[in-house]
Image (cartoon, rainbow, N blue to C red; front, side, top):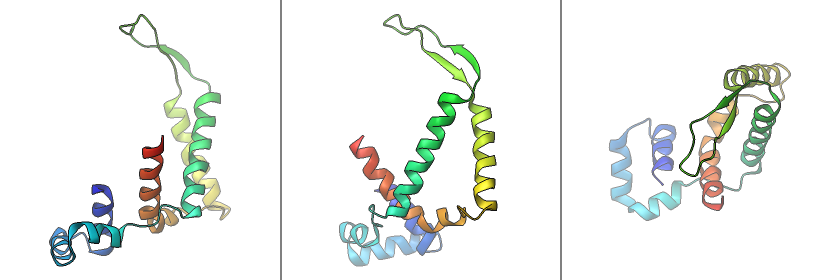
Length: 128
């Protein structure tokens, strides 16, 4: 996948696409992708993904906001949204700060797990 190659280029090859091209030329594209593709089955990555999904879903459903009615669709439906995006964003940042302050979650872990997170989200996107 393209995103894995971009991540790997930045993470392991100092952002050099020349080095990436040299590695792919020396090893072949398919075998190189297979060699650098991080495992999508890292439990820490899945915990982060599902925790974040659950928290954001909770915020979207329970944070109040003004009702917003979108334009009528071709089938005659009127989508109704809750305009609470800014509030959810601020609450997300506050929660990150709280989790970091109490050493429950260290934001730097995202950097070290980014390859596994991208790989896991690729699998998740293919399944759902």
